[in-house]
Length: 561
Image 1: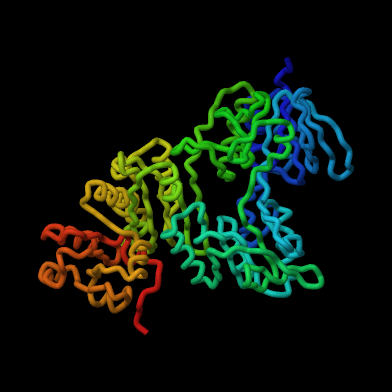
Image 2 (image 1 turned 90 degrees about the horizontal axis):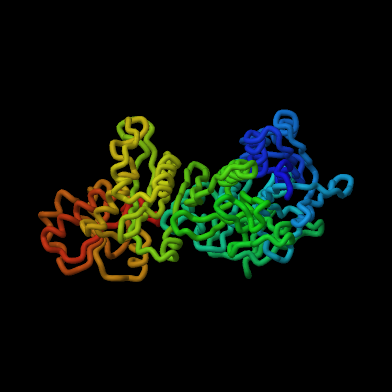
């Protein structure tokens, strides 16, 4: 049996260096080698859009620890510019090649860590290899983009894919004075993360910044000039001018080395690992973007490539390869992004994911402010919360706006990890002082709306559902209970709309029919819910309010000219 005093780590971005550093702290005597094909270790790839956008000025700021730190302080052998080409499991060895000299050698291990990350997804489009078409997954990519931008002879930049990196890069390019267009094959931005009614506000914000957004459009190829530089992006019969293109279509696990070694690959396409992050070979561990993870809510395997998960994996692996026995519980899918002045955050499941998992859901949509409005500087946010109708168990949530959203999503992510219900959330003892919060946090309000819906005190339609009813010409009353002054400032223009201010409602009931469908709106739904209860109390049979009301309405409104 081999001893356990030789640890080899393949991959030096996040999970690998973290595993190596933890292993060194757990066992000061073990021999550790890190193999990394690029020149830098421990790079902050999540900061790449801000480096391209020149918010981060120096490449060195993206390197958390220099290779010499691992050599001199952590007493490790660091082999940068070196590629692992074969894993021989029977011999417990890795064949490596020095990429500068081409020299091949063999490195023996007792425990092996695979932290090879992920690679960009690139469809086989015609013209994909033209000059000026980039992906962004490492510092060399970012430097290549920066260099190309410095010589760019036209200002049109096309981003293909409206995921997190794509939208962060939209701001980076905009800040450099470029004309930015985003193409997304699905129906709205961040389609894997956000529901349509939340994403619509992100799209509206992008458009307000001058970004052109093409949703539901598929790229079919690229065309270039005589110099081989990209000049056009094709979407079927439509062509867009382009000086540069960024492909931001997500990533896929980099598993070729592991697959060739015969390790088990999961149904997601990521390396299959147990809760101790062991692969199908007990002497080989894997973590980070190349490994699949378990969703705590659904208990199904998934891929969620994030630096935060990679670092957690690294610590657990480092503990276990030196004799420990830690486990990784899984993820709830938390993500946050800065999209211009919008703070976009989510955790748990979105509606499509919840329904696919078999849940009967109930949701709330709450427009509010990030702290007490009487204290200066309060900023608007919108919170969407989702729970299981049967027992009130929290399933997920989303928050967008110019105010503080990450705080709310972090609270919700914590609640999800412990299987909390809307009742638990509604009574959480959260910090309150006017500069930081309202007496009831936005999450408290969102939970209380769901509790009212679960007891049938509150009934609602989403803005999306109301928009569809209007567009389909359905017969119902969209009852606006705001003041005439608010109405004159902005209102929804539709034949179904009727204005009756809330203070006048009890005196003008004869203008409404108790048998017709009524959907009530105001500014944020507080008055609309009150109006629903008034109409319920006098015998109206089919009354709902519009969730979030006008503040949650992402569509066109009529305003004074």
